[in-house]
Amino acid sequence: MTSKANKGAWIIWGEHCPVCAYVTKERVCPRCGAAIPVKDKSLIIEDEGLRGGFSQVPNVVLRNPLLSSNAKVLYCLLLSHAWHDNECFPGQDRLAGYMGCTRKHVNTILQELRRHKLIDWKRTGRSSLYRIKRLTG
Image (cartoon, rainbow, N blue to C red; front, top):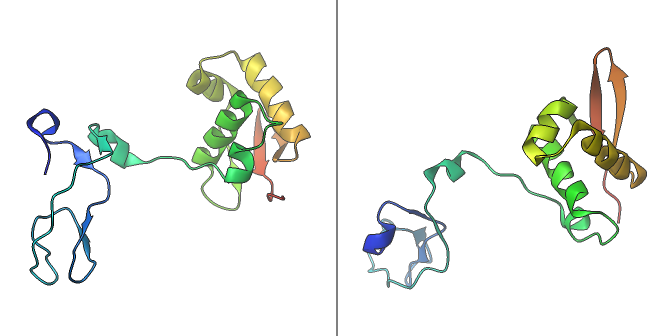
């Protein structure tokens, strides 16, 4: 199923069984026993660490031409920190480290996201409580 160069790589998805439509990475369908035709893969992920998580960006944010690329990335980082109740607590130093920029630049990008009504925050002592706002449009 994988070439010698891709041995051990994790392949996203799988093949559909031609009999029962079950999706599997096996050559024989575990549900009905039919042979699964081998197809060329269009996406191979070689890094097992990618299974540990990923972030998604809503299309209304991703495709917004009024948002800078950095604002889209920072929004995604905020989403990656959000767990419950639409709240997240990443520090600006941490965000700057992730983005490879200064804390001042992160603050500028946060202001951009706030102007577009995507996020808001309030000071809570030494840190801030960020709120990811309900998307419109």
